[in-house]
Amino acid sequence: MLASEVRALFAVASRPEIVSLAGGMPAVDALPLEAVASTMSDLVTKRGAVALQYGSAQGDPGLRARICDVMAMEGITDAHPDSVIVTVGSQQALDLLTRVFIDPGDVVLTEGPTYVTAINTFAAYQARVVHVAMDGDGLSPDALRETLGRLAAEGARVKLLYTVPTFQNPGGITLTQPRRAEILEACRRAGVLVVEDNPYGLLSFTGEPVRAMRADAPDDVVYLGSFSKTLAPGMRVGWALAPPPVTARLVLAAESAILSHSMLTQLAVERYLATQPWPEQLKEFREMYRERRDVMLDTLAETMPPGTTWTRPDGGFFVWLTVPGGVDTKAMLPRAIAARVAYVPGTGFYADGSGRNAMRLSYCYPPPERIRDGVQRLAKVLRAEIDL
Ligand code: PMP
Image 1 (cartoon, rainbow, N blue to C red):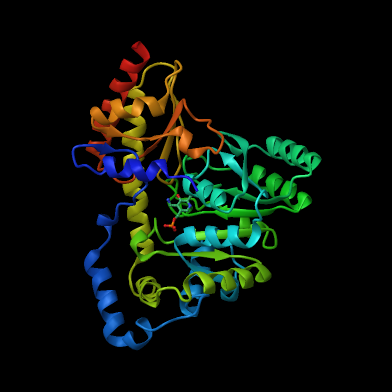
Image 2: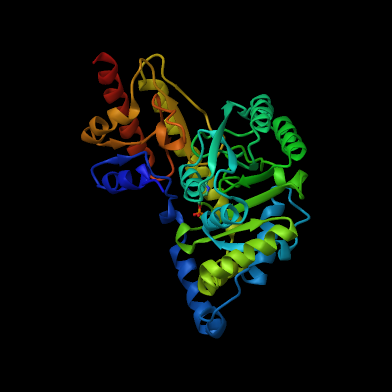
């Protein structure tokens, strides 16, 4: 296992004088806390005997049915609650899947860069993580076919393609629909299961929900979802939708991991969705994050030195910044912290040491004026670094 650079960084970045563009923490203070409180209080007083009891490892059936309604918003209209397992955040689904599918040395394909904790999970089960190149349209189908061919020639066992196709963490990039079809086809031919990790899909700034890959390939995709970004990560409620034989194995693995998910938080989420105007809440989140994205992009354009490039996300939380002039973003971080701004160096998002000239910036948590300050400070530090 690797110590997470991100975790160490969070301790520093949470100091109040530092503008943290590092963490991916959702702005839970925008939630109507009174409504959350009354939902939870009602739940305990009216259904305490169930909410405070053990549940099943697959999760509450009522919540699983509501999860199917949520996925329908992204074009998944054929999901059955029996094919869903509720997990402790989507992170647990990723852990269970890796446990079920990976023997030491098996290959997991991922975008490069990809979600840092996924890399750590795969490493914990001794998978070999192989990155596939991506560009502004997401994962490259040509690079995927080339990588699959090379690995087949080597005799490698390629088990999974892990992808965050929509508003990616860390790139902010969305895989185009034509590429989705090509990637599904290449994986189907190679017998590789696609893991579509989609915690940001409902946070689109254009209003158009992005069609999930799972919507077009029910037998070939395991879909991971989460209420962490659209409600609250403290609930720790996520899920996996998988072909039935896979779901059955995930449930067995979950039984040995946790016996039962928390009934209290599962039912709290279920009741919240049933009784509160959650679609309105989603709309507010989208507007708030879009404003923050705009402030970040505008300030980057105003302040960054020539040669710096960045992505322009249509949803989610993250911008990926590539710096010029041989600057090493990891070496620069202490000077950024001294200037009271934090980011995550790019190397954390690769298993192979790439990413020295890049960083992830998040706009989800600080209010707009702090984002502006933070980007201005960062630009100053970067200019000084280039002049060194
Ligand atoms: N996948 C991705 C791409 C994420 O960004 C995150 C949260 N940072 C997760 C999974 C895990 O989310 P959770 O366990 O809170 O559902």
